[in-house]
Amino acid sequence: MIGSYRNVTAARKEGIEKKRAYLIGGGIASLAAAAYLIRDGHMTGEQITILEQLDIDGGCLDGSGNAIDGYLMRGGREMEAHYECTWDLFSFIPDLMRKDPDEVPTNPRPELVSNPDQTVLKRIRDVNQWDPNSSKCRLMSNCGDPDRDPSLGLSIGHVMELTKLTLKTEEELGAMSVKEFFSDSFFKTNMWYFWTSMFAMETWHSVVEMRRYMQRFMHLMPTMSTLEHILFTTYNQYESMVLPLQIWLRDKGVNFDMKTQVTDLDIEITNGEKTVTAIHLFRDTADNHETITTTVDDLVFVTNGSMTENSTTGNTHEPAVLNREEGACWTLWKNIAAKDPAFGRPEVFCSNIDKSKFVSFTITATDSPIADLLKEFTGVDPYSHKAVTGGIMTIKDSSWLMSATCNRQPQYRSQPVGSYQPKQHKDEPDKNVLAIWAYGLFPDNIGDYVQKKMSDCSGEELLTELLYHWGAKDRIPEIMKTVKVIPCMMPYITSQFLPRVKGDRPEVVPEGCKNLAFLGQFSEIPDDCVFTVEYSVRSAIMAVYTLLGITDKSPPDVYPSKDDVRVILKASETMYGGEIPGEHLLKHLLKGTSLSGSLD
Image 1: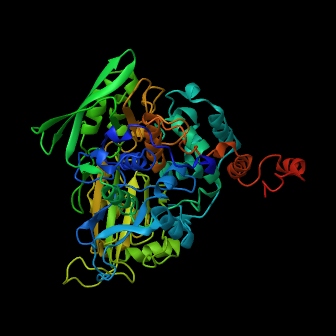
Image 2: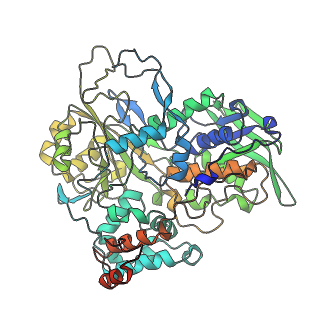
Image 3: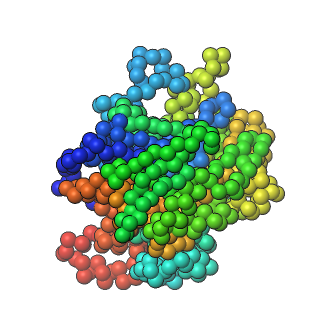
């Protein structure tokens, strides 16, 4: 837990005004590190530079497009109340508001500024308290038949396997895959369908990562079928999280060097001490080379690896073409790793694209009958500004293992929906637009209705397959007249789950490093879970505190779900389908103690 006793203002370090910080990569980890350098490191924004290859920050936390051409979300992030690092960060980042409150309210792109009266955390908490999440149709099969069974469907043997997993050490499990650990029958249970679709974890992925998830999120097991304790942002995560943070950092004077690709670092290694002495980069074109000289007093933070590197998009009529070239982010990590074993082994994560890719697609539906379908499944009017699907709806018998979600609308500030209907163009009539996101975990499989590989399908074909599984085959022609569909192929999206062992990921600050830290999903953080915003923000706090020698406060602890007997009992009860073997005896033994209500 964060512990209020440690929630103090860090002391200002002597000589901090002479330091410079360079953050390579503009994802949430770098943005968070910049924020902590300012708040707890007492650096000014002018001392901090973020170097980003693209022309936009945010990394995996994206959200782009418009109601005319179609919206695009490569993915989404499910969050929960015990993201201690994430909520600490956004407890001091102001939310956004219109610069001119008297501006015409239907302007789709108002100028936004920080709101001094509300934090991002407050905004997220308010909207989730007003509209608590709840899934009404978590699983379905047989062309639109909802599966209302809330149980995990586990046998005693499956429970024993899960228990055994939590008791094993990471060293014992090594590079074992999920499939190697569990019996084949486990992968037919509701538990596995909940798990694989929620976390995008597949049978060939690391069972060590599954173990971490089991222990880290054990308190969520009783609501896996309803997702009742999952939190979502008001808009897409770029607009809800990245943009407020970026605006705050700009207001503090942080330098954003966009379209700047870092290619290598010079690292001096002497008697085990490792010091970055130069950053090699080019701006805009490969011919525009530049070298930034650094000293031991400067700080260099590297986001090593990327889940969304080399993402490609298609459109309603064309598929997203897989890019198998090695991305710049991976090349940079390889160049750094070649200098010392402490910097990790990037090839473990970037050398097997066919086991780390999947396809997602975003549906932009305008005055569409698809809204009626969603209401039939969930009982919620998609135009009501309430959570619609309450998380993903997964199709158990889909050859692509497809899932789809319609989060609380609008997902974009520019999105016309319900009573708020901004216009993209002055001659455009008022319309209701929905932004729906879907994905499939098996892009190389042939569809059940569309007889093509998912990876070869256009947006129209992807939606056709989804509508077939939703039991709306006869409505496909009329729905297609009302939508634009943008597919996205992501070669490395689950690369962080590939089997790995100790040393494959570098420590956040490797031993001997004087001014170098690694950030994000491919750094090593004990006990916490990759593929989460929390992991990135935690790496940022750890890196800043370690390199600056901040000792009067520390990062929040990973939530100790696995150490809470109440959580263990509830999780056990859920796995056993409602009653733990010997529960009556256990209740008798606990009677009259402080734990007497734990099994109620």
